[in-house]
Length: 216
Image 1 (cartoon, rainbow, N blue to C red):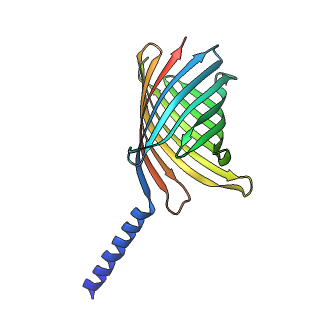
Image 2: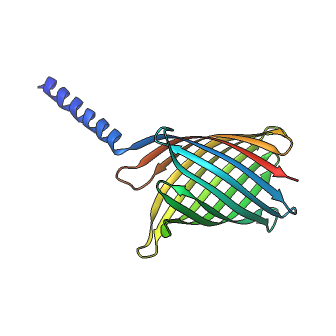
Image 3: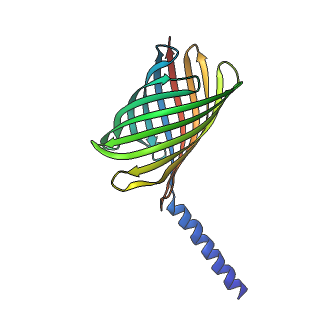
């Protein structure tokens, strides 16, 4: 009898583990970017970037896009910004507009940021997504050239026809930024991204590398 119970227990455990693995869609991705920015004053900055994202275990180009944006500092601790993105996603054209509010607290070499971003995505000229995003970020400056950071972000999605929906996605990121040449930076990061409130959630494990140039 005990042996039968053990067998049943093992079968149930195997079923639970298998069901859990099947229910999750796991993928390794690579994101690359190159960007440039110009500071016209201590308060106003304009910039752009080009980015490519590979998915399906880095075997397929999923998204390529260019993005232009501007940021304006209303105070030492509060900055607003707007961005426009245009590119390809899958077999169609993708566009995005977003507006951001960033709050900053400085404590010696430490920086704490809260970003609230309103985002709308268009796919093939129809509305694909509406998201309200909240990101908390901590940054530590090791020296004049080397910085490290960790961040957590949550996406809240809604549709105007259905009213507010639910929490859609979560992101956790850790990375470094290094100024290898004057005004030239390289960034490396690792990110976990997972769906929320989905029966079969996607789980992405992302390695990112980026280059940024700041013009005088």
